[in-house]
Length: 198
Image 1 (tube, one colour):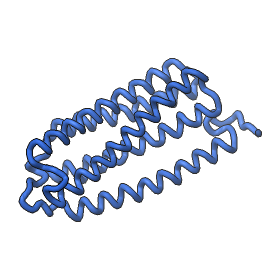
Image 2 (image 1 turned 45 degrees about the horizontal axis):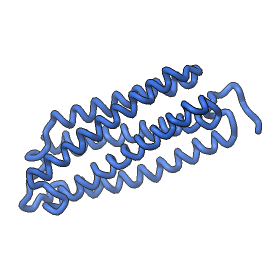
Image 3 (image 1 turned 90 degrees about the vertical axis):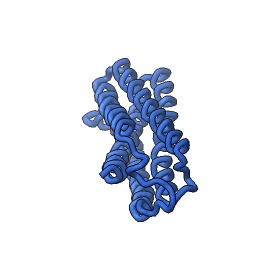
Image 4 (image 1 turned 30 degrees about the horizontal axis):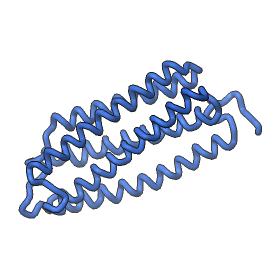
């Protein structure tokens, strides 16, 4: 296997570069998925039937907390990859751990938000607006949950093996996934919550 030591560790082998390219292609498919969910939501967001509309159920407080947690987690994820590239295992692990804790906090606030909606009578079956909202937010939340499981498993592997060509490649790919989730959230914040509160 030919290695190019001038590149960051996650890119040094051809196999690693191919994995990163393959993951970019996967993210392209994820963009199509979320674009479809946004299109459905933006088509149905005024179809409230006899149920509440966005202004009646959205509260800015939880949304700002979710946004702060997720965007901060993106920053700490970037610090984890930077530490990895400097060969600093312990700081990298700390930043990955903080990233996952922030992601867990985000998920906790989102679950509480869903419970509040349901307690107010805003369920998946209430209206087309709420169905599209729950599916969009739930799909994003499920992706965050998968990221938390993936990140936890990755941290166990790094702890056991340290940073190798394989673990550094996996860490970088994980960071691409996590940043993608943050970008999707920015669109949710802008086109779902802010639009709904206006």
